[in-house]
Amino acid sequence: MGIYADIKEDFVNAYRNDPALVSKLDFIFNYPGVWAVAWHRVAHRLHNANFKRFARIIMGFTQVMTNIDIHPAAVIGRRVFIDHGTGVVIGETTIIEDDVLIYQGVTLGGVSLTQGKRHPTIKKGAVIGAGAKVLGNISIGEYAKIGANSVVVKPVPDCSTAIGIPAHVIEKGRCKDPFMHNMLPDINKEMFEYLLKRVAVLEHILVKENKEVIEQDLELEHIYESFIKSMKN
Image 1 (cartoon, rainbow, N blue to C red):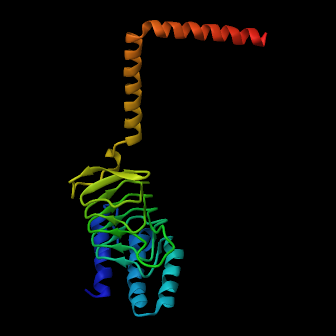
Image 2 (tube, one colour):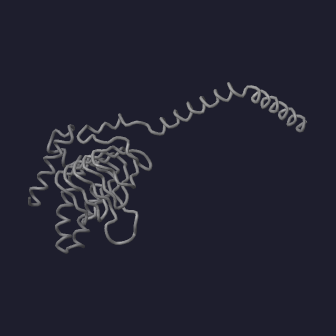
């Protein structure tokens, strides 16, 4: 496909991904992600044709207008949709395959200052939740889902959901289920609940099997408290 066909497909794709879009006029004021990708397609062609400075100038103006920072060397596939888009950063060696959905505040960044591939590869159909940080030369698998505000530093398999800081996989084998942010489990809460219940069970066992020891311990505590009070007086 030519660049014009790719850009036209980007605009059509926005209607599929955002039910709030009801007018073509909305594109002008409310869809910076669509414009950022469209201008990137132009800048990327220029970058590959060795007009690198001109490409950087185009993306510099685009960043000012959209608040989305995309390096012109990054590779972006077809029907990639950046929803809302504010604060999105896409690094130089990033590769984004077809049909990827990216929400606002996402960073596809590097963790190395060396040359070469240092940014992530986002495979077909993946969804990157708002505020997520995907860092380093890692791969996010096909139809994988990254929870909002997660920090991903390790590869995520195909058809998986990853959440947390650092992110870890909580579900596998769900390729095309809708990404319900409000349905993601609270891993930290579940772990604290487990630990509290575990401590309660252990305390119950100790009380039941070591009643005399616990009574002696309480008696020593009373003696110690009396001693501290007498010292203060």
